[in-house]
Image (cartoon, rainbow, N blue to C red; front, side, top):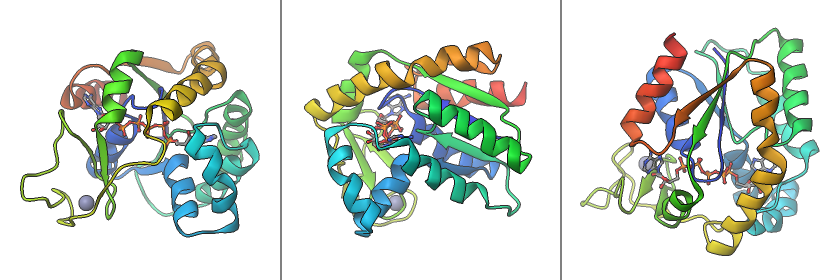
Length: 215
Ligand code: AP5
Ligand code: ZN
């Protein structure tokens, strides 16, 4: 099964994707994670996108489509792909449709994580991530364990993202409304869109997504 998780910054795409990886043997394809990896390892492309990401602007379609194309060639046995943070423009959505068709992989569901802007600010400003395994925490809703060790991998290496500040978040939201939100209409018209309440707590959102996937 191949699915897209669609929603603004902080909607919970990464949190839900990680749960699906753990419970359904699915593969998470997060263009944000791929770009951050390229930036951290100092590749030419990584250096090129660093400022764009820090500002909260979108990286070019050409770069992100190229990243996804490479990953889709992965043919090993797994429970399907979760597209997290991709597609983000109509050009990316069209390219994804073509790539999936060419590799004979269907797109089964597009799940919209519905949230409101106020919640996003709170979520983003409280977020930290394990620098070792990528587990996502939140100062209030999912605090780091009291012993200072990641609950998933035991490392003590928590990070905050360079683009998790108010100015960049405002810009990321603007990009979302201008360029990504039209995808809701696009996938609705293709009869693929299901909205779940992303404001519910993490476990409830997991259950809502499971209902869609198991229907
Ligand atoms: P990306 O990494 O994709 O970031 P984003 O879309 O801004 O999304 P986030 O990772 O911020 O949020 P999320 O929805 O995953 O929320 P999370 O689960 O962490 O992109 C970063 C940048 O890369 C872009 O700005 C752009 O420059 C570039 N880029 C990436 N893809 C691109 C593309 N396709 N095209 C062009 N450019 C691209 O949750 C947030 C917090 O809330 C956490 O602390 C979590 O613990 C908490 N939380 C989660 N769910 C709940 C819940 N239900 N209740 C309470 N708290 C919750
Ligand atoms: Zn960890």
